[in-house]
Length: 110
Image (cartoon, rainbow, N blue to C red):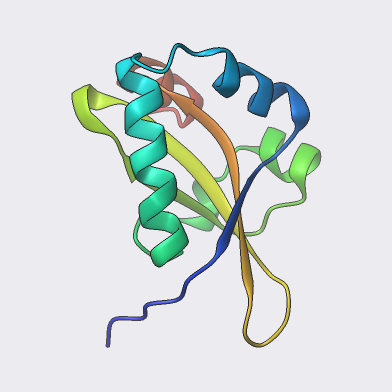
C-alpha cells in the first residue's frame, strides 16, 4: 500500500531558510530544492525513509526528530527532512539540511 499525504513544508530554522533565500533564482540547487518542496507538499512520503539507527544524534538533539527522510536531488545532492504530524489529518514537513553526495556520506557515515 502506497500512502499519499499532503503536507505543509517549512525550514527547520531561520538560518537555513535565509541560506535558501540567498541562493540566486537561477542556481540549479535552488531550482532542485523548489521542485522537491513542491513534491513534498503533494506527498510528505515521497522521499526515502532513513532507518532510525542512522539518524544523526545532532538532528535528534537539535530538532527532536524521531524520523528522517531523504529526497534525492539531481547531480547527487540530497535534501533531508522530517515529518511532524500536527493532528490526525495534517503533517508538517521540516527541511533540515541539503548537501552534495560527499557531505551526505560524511553525515551518515557511508
